Length: 531
Image (cartoon, rainbow, N blue to C red; front, side, top):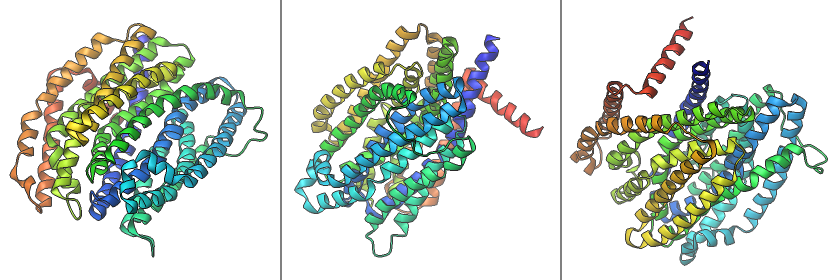
C-alpha cells in the first residue's frame, strides 16, 4: 500500500510538471524569439539598458506581490478550503481575495506612475549622468507599470487553476505574452518609437495572460467579482495575510538582491544591465522549464499532504522532486557552461548586437551557471515549508542570504565587473539552499538523504560523459565569424542532441531510478493512448 501511494504521489507530480514544462518550453522558445528580435533592433545599448531597467520595476513587483507571494500564500489556504469546506465558502474566499488584490494593486500602480522618476533614480542612479537615458527609462516605466495590475489578476487565476489540477491554461498564457511582445517589437505602433511600442506590448501581453485563463476559472465555478462589504475581512483572507507577510518579506529579499545588482550595474560600463539580463534569461531556460514547472506542481500536492497531516508522503514528494530536478538541471548546467558562447552567438549576434556583447553575455552565463543547481533546489525545497504553512524559516534564511549577496556584490563588482554581480547571486543562492536543507531535516526528520545522494552521484558521472563532445563543438572556428547560420544551428542542435543521448545512455548503465520512472510513465501514457 505504501509503495502504491508513493507511486501515485510521484506520478501526480510528474504528470502535472510535464504539462507545465511543455507549455513553459513553448513560452521560453517564444521568449528567446522575443529577445532575439529586441537584441537585433536595440543591441546592448543605452536604449536597451533603459528598457530593461524600466521593465525590471513592475516585473520585480510582479514576482513580489503577484506570482510569488500569491502562489505561496493563496494556494495552501485555497486548497484547505477546497478540500475541507463547501464550494460556496471557497467562492466567497476567492471573491474576497480578488477585491483586496484589486484595490491594493491599483494604488501601487498609481503610485508607480506618479513617482516613476524617483523610482528610476533609486534603482539606477548611474542613469542620472545621462539625462536622455534617465528620461527614457522614466517614460518607459510609466507605460509598463499597469502590467502589474493584469499580471496580478493572472496570478490569482493561476493559483485557482493549479490548485484544482488545471495546469495547462496558466502555463500557456505566458507564451501568449511573448507573442504579443514579439508583434509589438517587429511591428511598432503607428507613430510610436520602437522602444515605446515594445513597452506597450508588455501591457497588452499582461492583459492576454489574464484573460486567457478566465474561461477555465469559470468552468470550475469561480468568478472574479467584488465582495462587499470588504470589512470585516474574510477569515480565509486573514489566514492568507498571516502567511503573506513573511512570504512577501522572503520574496522582497530576492528583489532587493536584484535591485542592488541593477544599482551597481547602472554605474558600470554601457551594456552591463543588458549582459546580466540576457545571461539570466538563458539561465532561466532550464530553470523555468523544469524548476518552476516542478515547483508549480509540487506546491498543491504537498499542500494536500500537509492538510491531511501525511508527513510520509510529504517527504516522498520532496525527495522525488529534488532528485528529479537535479537529474535534469545538472546536465543543463554542464551544457550551458561549455556551450555558452555558441548559444549566445547563434541567438543574439546580429544587427546591433556585436561580438563584444556576445562575450559579455557569455561571461555572465558562466558565473550564473555556477549556482544553477542551487536556484533549482530552492524552487523545490521552499514549497515544502510553504505547504507546512511555515513561511518564517525561508524568510530568515533568505534575509541572511540577502546580506551575504550585498557584501559579495560590492566586493566582487570591482575586480570582476558584471561577472562579479552574477557570481555574487550564485554564491548567495548556494548558501540559501544548503541552510534550508539543514533546517528542513531538523523540521521533518529524515529526508531520504542516502537515496538523494546516490542519485546525485549518478547524475554527476553521467553529466561528465557529455563534456568532451560539447567542449569540442564550442572551440570550432565557425563561432568566430558572421554568417553560416544554418551550419551553426546544425552544429549546436547536434551537440545538444548527442549530449542528451550520451547522458541518458550513461544513466541507463548506472540504472538511474529517475530514468526508469520516466520510462515507465511514458510507456503507461502510450499504452493508455492506444486503448
